[in-house]
Length: 295
Ligand code: NI
Figure 1 (cartoon, rainbow, N blue to C red):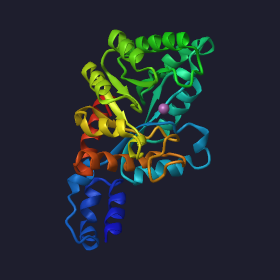
Figure 2 (figure 1 turned 135 degrees about the horizontal axis):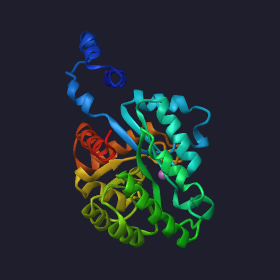
Figure 3 (figure 1 turned 30 degrees about the horizontal axis):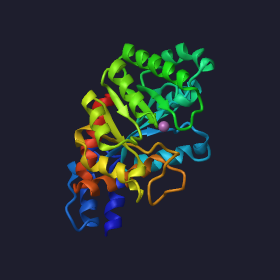
Figure 4 (figure 1 turned 180 degrees about the horizontal axis):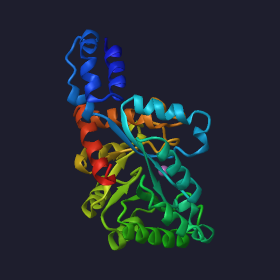
């Protein structure tokens, strides 16, 4: 029966309130417990960070999107990492009402050759389906581009986002102090630290500045002690959920290609850690994402 009920939920995700009332008798037949329709409507999840434009999705992009939306996601934000990817993100967003885009240059792509396109990215940012500038930030782990290029690009894009009053999506890898200092000095306190990898103190410091903390699938990994602590202890009003698909698939899909639907595994683990229901977690994190990105 459990399976039938959850399949029923999948279908409900795509229906209007009227449709649902029309099929009410069927849902009562299928279910031996009362389904709270408000719970179903309010417990939809948002994947606040995916890279749907990447080649990993070339073979089955439509199916991946369909699986996510039928599986209980209300929105997906597909995040740009350079000019072309930002453009593709916008195209995808225009093909589907539930998809929104962000534009920007990932720190891996910071540098003089990218600077040539920054005006074009700024133009893209004016598109009606663009809800954020990102992902931007610092990555001193991979070091694909020089720290000074990364710093310049980060500050420049923060300024552009501020001018357009767009929230920022921040990438911070092995650069906690620098990212914090820059956001404190130049940021407007409107955005999210994506795929958060710091400890609880750092999370609270970012929250103090006004930023949301986004919990990735890493939280499902056994050895992710720090992330589990962050996910279980920060104020829920400051938390978002994400996949970073196609990267970092959560357990039980670890090692496979990640996709937006898998944010539900992350949500289950965070709800377990916080000892709250999945519906409560979904309701709050979805409201947070809607507030930040004005969805
Ligand atoms: Ni990303």
